[in-house]
Image (tube, rainbow, N blue to C red; front, side, top):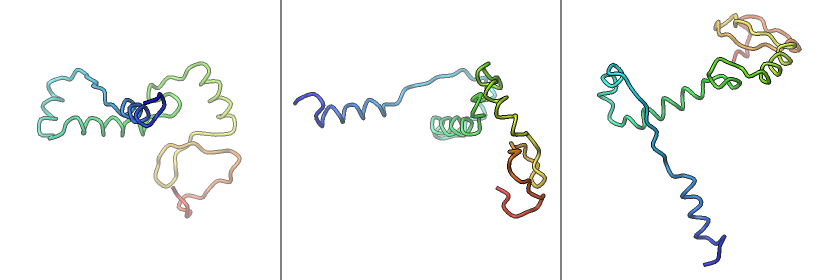
Length: 109
């Protein structure tokens, strides 16, 4: 079979989807708390994905911006502010170029 044929494509897909083992240290309290979970690997995968989904898109959850990211943020912040929502009290970014909504107005995300 020549290179680039159907078998090599299938092998490339198989290599791309191959799982890797990741290990981490845990204290006894966490091990005890996880004792009743039947599929700990799936639970840990789901917890990590949920945590990553909620991480800051700029710092990726580190809480620290690089000097380059800080410059971009400062340019963005010139026309935006971080405020508390009057309805749900969540902290969010508000664009200075959009009209403000009244608290309780329809259209709350």
